Length: 172
Image 1: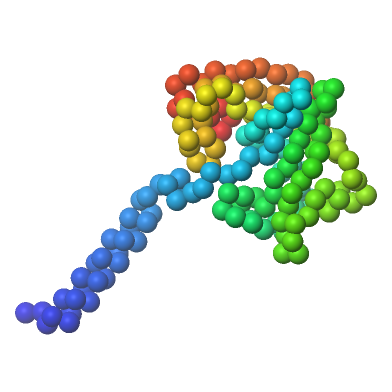
Image 2 (image 1 turned 30 degrees about the vertical axis):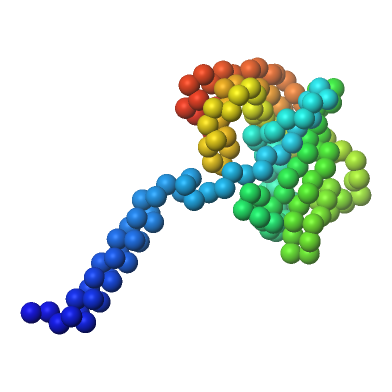
């Protein structure tokens, strides 16, 4: 016969073990927050940007600053505003947060106040278009995407990709 105190401790240990297992089984998306997108101005219109063209800028010889998340919707620690002008991708502004407060473009590019040509970026920019099909985390899924191919900061191709089933986000 097991004393009542031992039964209670054993029951508590079993409940904690089950809770621990459940924490690992719950999808991480259920615990996540949709992230604020960077912004892209294209042909004078404002769009959400489902890509992060600033990230490749950082690497050997150019370490990423220690940004901090001002909230759970901005884990990367910044929101950048971009523009495509005459076929060139420019970083127009940035709102970034550090331990010393909010900083802007001059903190990342000393001596620069205006737009910076994104010559470091080669890849695809993904611009959601049309109707949102699924409010997925970290980025919602849309019916169409404008895919913009960029090489060393210059636009070389654009195409619209249909996503009729809305089961996935192209390029992810």
